[in-house]
Image (cartoon, rainbow, N blue to C red):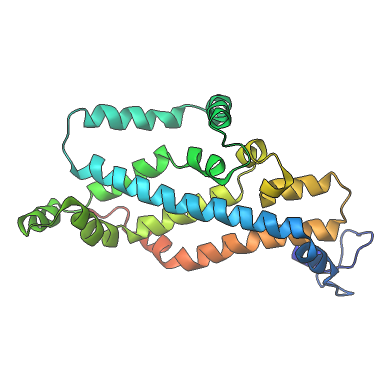
Length: 244
């Protein structure tokens, strides 16, 4: 993909040289020179980053409540919420779109982001991780007069950095590569994401090197996100079986 993206426009032969010769960056010039492509990159960043922040915040709060708090109906509520994992996404897609459409969320950022924030898998992972933390930490904090918000900020968040980083990488990957929901909600050209935008270019007989240049640009942020969270990612895997 990278090699062919640096080749000049023209016919491509397979198998070909592993080196892009003659070397040409015209495909990247065309991609970065296109106003719509830069807009798609911005839309994808907003969709992915805001969704990651929202999912991590809501799932960590819910996971803390389900793991360490006592309230009536906790188990029933948790397993009812977890049952969302057994419902195929395509079953809820049409009702979700109707609700968003009735609220005026079509072709808007909030309409794109809001339905993705209730992530049952993220809540389950957070609950399981936080449940393994020693109860003595929370009891000592409450004896010192810490509020629930202080306990969450000063104890829970520092201790769940590995699962936050791991889940953040996965959520970012899911949203960056998401195709179906952005295709339905972002109906105008200005609200397309990279995945839907590149798919639309394939219908316009755009040269192959330009399509692959767009794919390389779409791949780089995912790779960078993994590099940033790699240390916590491996730490989370190494300590996931350790209790207490």
